[in-house]
Image (cartoon, rainbow, N blue to C red; front, side, top):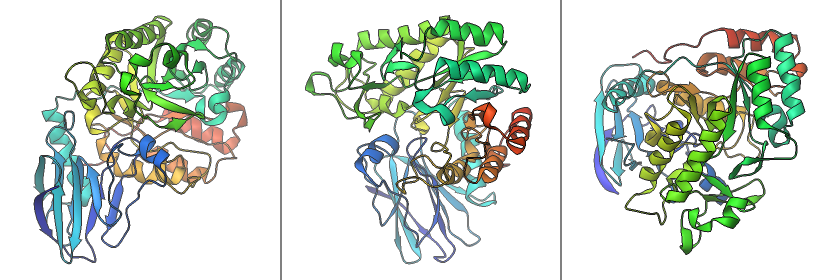
Length: 446
């Protein structure tokens, strides 16, 4: 890494802000003596941190964005990629007594912010300027959602969807979009082939839109291909890496994962077919997940790198679904996604449990979702609408009042993901209230 700057600090009070690579990467500020969060396993590194980049345990490192509050009356220092859509340098800080030495492996802008308010306010002012430079349109108002994921997970059935449609009508909940999440598809990558728990996606969409008068949404992981899928078996040349062997996109759903190479004309045509077909069914909200896979480096067709292929893939999806459809990103590289999405998950998955199972705060847990979501609050209303993840208000959810307070404070995209019949009085009242109240325009006044 090349030296960028040296910043004099008050060691006992100084803080360093690390911005993680993608939605689930831990993002927060640290005191100089604290150890930053690092992946607990190779699997987590691939799925939730920056693949191919190892951040040291004894230094701070932000992916395209890092900030220093010196802890005295001096300005906040912000180090940021000039254009994170094209290049995202890693920015590293090493402490040497009362001096922090900053280095990067690519060009970064160094801004000294004298506006006051600490790191959060400085990042908000930086984001205002960055959004103008990137020509980001003001976010559209977000719909309210009900999502199948956090109760049913991959075991969701058509019967479950029908039950909750009836419940939201009976309870008169202000839900605009009913989102079918992971579990409807036969395999990861085979998005137009249904599991045996669903009869007809067209019939379900018709029930949502025509019988119940709500909009239909769907979850897709468009750049992932599971090793069990028909796509992987029939078209290995469509995978990143191609004939050289497919690139590793992680392991989940009890199988190895690969990445779809959208620079391959036939793979791009397949991606377009998937989203055109779903849009024609009447679906107009699309949550695209695990999209970090679209930015993996590897052998590709034509002279294009991982970030270029990623933006190309998202733009193909946008073209297929139309400009009026609502596009929500998740598991996405943050800076390369600016300008592409209506809304963005800015934290790890929430969960019915408070702590992550393996202690890694990139993994599902309310605690990790809270601190990373708070640290990215400044992006709301500037880059997109922030999605802090779904409200979970049923009695079985650990520390549900705390999670509801986080969603109320930081949730720009308001969604419920309980089996509605499981809500008690507090859960129902909280769900109705948070779905009824419009979120703030922006979370940090700068």
